[in-house]
Length: 575
Image (cartoon, rainbow, N blue to C red; front, side, top):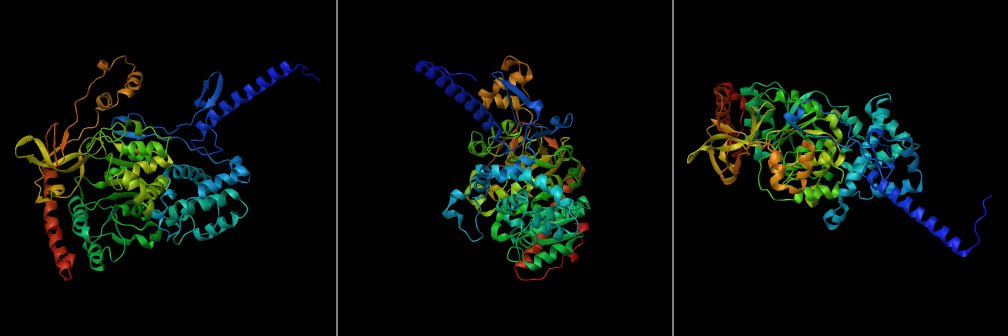
């Protein structure tokens, strides 16, 4: 046995050494805990991502998502952090005092259907929500294989899973967490598993009320009659008061393979309380399509939309988004908010225009593709941002409507996604006083740089209420490749990282790509890049949509006057 010194001074020295060692150990442990707590508790990180600090080994979160070679040339890819898999240690933790506090923390913000959360806005805490969604992701990936292994129909499987929850704390926690996060899901079903197993095939989803009726008629007939696409179509609305029965019947009758569906019959609208833009992600979620392409009512294609299901960025990630125009730089509201609620972000945000304060907007949500078989969790997180209180108290105040909720929803739960590289361009006609400017609607290109679709309708400038039909002859790209110039101009602090990544020593060594074209937002004109002419086929398609729109508006006006209109009386192919 070791004898301790009896001298008071020696005892004091030894005591101080012990205290110092305990403090040092605690600081090291806390540092490691703070890093690891960015992800879900109880998870493990891959050894390949370990690094040494002060001679000790610590671990960082991992990004294992692999990007196909050369995809970065045509797309910007968000590589997420891995959410550690749920383990037996995590399940064991749930039955401890720490587990009790964890569950209390993650479940505490649930609100009732009839509750007016505006009276208690503190219940909507996106920082806590992001943590809860990442724990949910780990649990979902753990429990779905269990569900798949059960026998019987989905109703039987859900009943069995509920029985299992009585003795398995992780299943019970999952059920309660899903109910808290996504309460609108449990409408005729008990879990998200039965919903995801119901998805099949590919298709297009539109949303329309009475106010968008003429737009959606033109958009659908453009696809069916002009493009001759055979993709099935579903049109979602929020009940008869949103889209009248007469207009519903018109849409069903006007072309083949069109369903008209009330979203509130699939998801619980007492929680969603849908209105305006918010219906879009919920319609995508409710759709029976496994691979779903949302299309705005005033969006029009120059190619068969089916080509997007074969897009390399979509095939690699399961989610494809398009950039908005580059407008209103110098605003940091969105980037500051996202940093504050989710300190662990994918590889995309730091390179985005929003984070570099080049543009206030990042995404244009006129066309969105999501594979719900592989990216259901990103879809759920996006819907959460558009639910009643989340959108009114937070997300629609931070962002302009639903646009940014798609990619930021994927960030909240850390799912991969792809942006088509080119920024929003323009399609239309030359500016009368400047033949180097193209004016009209917002154009988007495919991954090969060819005109693909545009958003904003058929008018010269709907923002300024100029409702003259456009003459579609020209287009101009919005750019999207000169990120080094933008970083140099807008983020001097990040230049050292850029230079290090490229192996350079001075900003003067950077290859400066041509400056992007710039918008005159008031006039809806773009200048500063090459003026391109549409092909004759593209001109015929685009200008032919005007004829369809004229018929749709005449029929819409007749309905407003109480007349019954049969869409089959028209020879749409002759328009």
